[in-house]
Each structure stands twice: as structure tokens, then as C-alpha cells.
Image 1 (cartoon, rainbow, N blue to C red):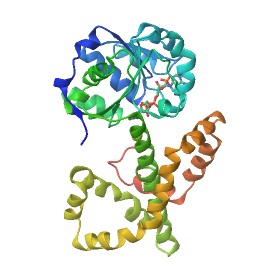
Image 2: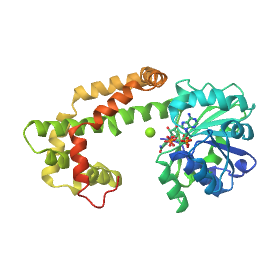
Image 3: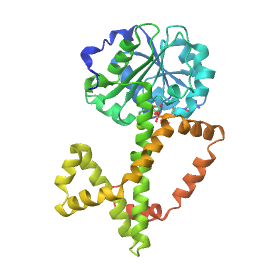
Image 4: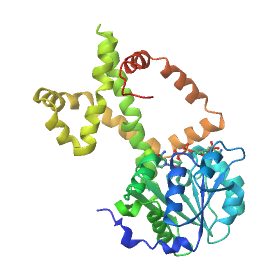
Length: 330
Ligand code: NDP
Ligand code: MG
């Protein structure tokens, strides 16, 4: 079983003696910087020149500096910009401003695990990764709670890396809920596999395949949209709050029988075999190399696939049907 840390395992005073630079003010950057500030940490926000986030950050009470200045001032630098930007920003603006004994932090292990950031020997390296989007990290903290986090220590030169990372987790509210010990490798590989096989890749492919099956068989696209995409939310909400069994309790016996007898025929051994192949490509770095090279080439594949997907019939039908639902906002 996993090791889990709570408030009583974290000494927040360790952070008060130090300065934390949060780099980036997007989903996680805003949430983590504001939570740390409200907890009483010395936070400085590092943003790129002309950042569109600067006015909002300043109006929310944060001190904004350049990334170089923030990194130079800080003892702990938490990098919260898109993963594919970590390498260049770290090399050019963060690393030259670090001192031995400083700590570099991330909220996802991709850039460290796959060698896009190569921290010097004298630097501590840790991850605190909230298991929820930034909006939730902020909202639950303001309500007095916290979103569970993961902790991983990659390099502990000072001997304080875990204690400091836990103090950080306490500052953003994570130890109120629980902070689970993992490794950079485990977090990175499971995160990539999960989003490819299920959360993003598997789910969208399943929806499209089922929609196409109905439309090809002559059914109206509107019907196919409701049955294969729209109602997924109801099912996921039930699974989210009570697991597979709660969902199966709440749907009809007919739906449950169809689920149990037909689901395994859709997701059969062939799918499982291809999932193992996808996992191997994550583990051996093939996926990471493809994504890093894709970014060096200015994302041609991503742009082409995005355009193609936006033109799918399911997206057009969906936009029309959602406009009939007054309670939905884009
Ligand atoms: P966002 O895409 O929301 O980050 C946007 C911020 O990054 C903006 O402030 C933007 O600057 C800045 N930025 C983008 N490119 C650059 C650049 N080249 N140089 C300097 N600043 C740049 O990121 P997320 O919050 O989604 O993700 C941050 C990290 O957190 C990632 O490692 C991610 O994997 C991890 N994570 C994210 C989660 C989430 O909920 N989204 C959940 C858990 C982990 P500007 O304001 O100027 O536009
Ligand atoms: Mg993820």
C-alpha cells in the first residue's frame, strides 16, 4: 500500500524561511501561487515578458517578476508552464539563476523523467502533483479542504527535499486531503498511459467508433450523438462518486446486463494487447521522443489532426444540439 502524508507530517514553517518562485500563471500556476500566498509563504511569480497573465496576477495580490529574477530570488522554483516548454525555459531562464541547495519542483514528471530538464548535481528535485485541475485546487482550498496530491523526490542533495516538498504540499492544501508517495517514473508513465488509453484517447475513439457505427447503419446523427456521447456524462458522474457498482445499481437491469455481457466483447484481448504496446512506447521513451520532435517542428501533426477532428460530423451535430440546452455554456 502507498505511503500517505497528512498535515501532521508537514512542517509549513520550513517554507516560511524560504522564497518560492512559481513559474507560470495558468491552471496550476494561479491555484498554487494563490494558495501558497494565503498560507503565508513568500511567493514570487515568474512570467515571460509581456505575459497576458500579469494584470490578473497583480490584481490578485501577487508580486510578478521576470522568470530570471524570480528564479534568482527563490530557494524553491516550481515550474508550472506547459510540459513541452520546460526544457528551453529551464535551460535559458531558470538554471543560470539557481544556486547549490535550491530546489526545482514540477507538478508532472515528463520533463525530468525524459531528460528535457537535467538538473545539476547540487540541486534538489521534487514533484508535488495535485490530482485535480487548478480551479478545483483553488476552490477546495478556499473552502478549507484540499485536493489529494502526489509527492516524488528525484534528487535529495540537502537531505531536506521531502520535508520541503511536504511543506509546499501543505501550503497548497494537499496534506489536508493526503499526499501519496510515488516516483517520477511511476507518475509520468501512468499519467501518459491513462490519458492515452482511457481519459482522452480511449474515450474519444470509443465515442467516435460507436457514433459512426450507428450513423453508417442509417440512424439519425442526432440520436447517435445523444446515445454515444452526451449521456456519457451521467454515467461518468455515477462512476466518479461511487465506482462501477454504483453506476450499475443506478442504470436499468437491461443496461447492466448489456454492460456485463457486451462490454468485454468491445474491449477484448486485442484491445488489451494494443494497450500493452502503447504502454511500452511510453516506458521506452518512444512517445516522449515523438512529442519532443513534434514540438521542435512546431507541431505539424497536432495542427493537422486538430483541424481534421474539428470538422467531424459528431462535432457539428453536437454544437447544434448543445445550443438547445440552455444550461450548457461552452
Ligand atoms: P497552462 O497551459 O495553464 O500554463 C499556462 C502558463 O504557462 C501561462 O502563465 C503562460 O504564460 C505560461 N507559459 C506558456 N509557455 C511559456 C513559455 N514558453 N515561457 C514562459 N511561460 C510560458 O499549464 P497547466 O497549469 O495546465 O500545467 C502546468 C504544469 O502542471 C504542467 O507540468 C502540467 O502537466 C501540470 N499539471 C497540470 C494540471 C492541470 O490541471 N492543468 C494538473 C496536474 C498537473 P502567459 O500567461 O504569458 O500566457
Ligand atoms: Mg494528467
